[in-house]
Length: 186
Image 1 (cartoon, one colour):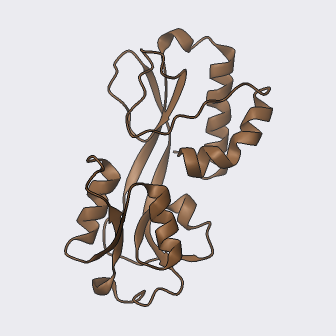
Image 2 (image 1 turned 90 degrees about the vertical axis):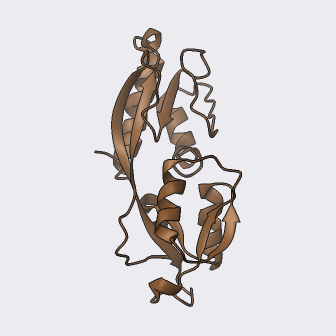
């Protein structure tokens, strides 16, 4: 979300909000709002802190993509995939991807979704990408598959003490509008 959704919209987000200082934390752990690691969290998981105010604001659909010139594009049983290294902890996208890969070959292992995207664009293999990323890149083709595609909820969370903060509320509204513009809303 940080690299492919927030980053392209940072200028617009800053202008709409009156040029506040924005700090984007893109980490594999869930930021603790109770420990003031952030004022607002945009997540692909609901989170676990019962003290947070959490609202589902959208959903992210995934599909399989390959470069237009990928040699095995019409041979699903022969697809080679872009996977994750063993260093990455277990998470929903990784579980779905490896279930989809099943016994097929992994041509390349990377550490995150941004690198999966870049690897797919290079032509090395098939990657499971968010549709808003894959559909927007003319180098990629969405592959037809009988596999069940992944869908993740997009959640905004804030600490209850921040709910009356005008900047936090305006940021939430602006992010929701940007999600709507990218067709990532429920």
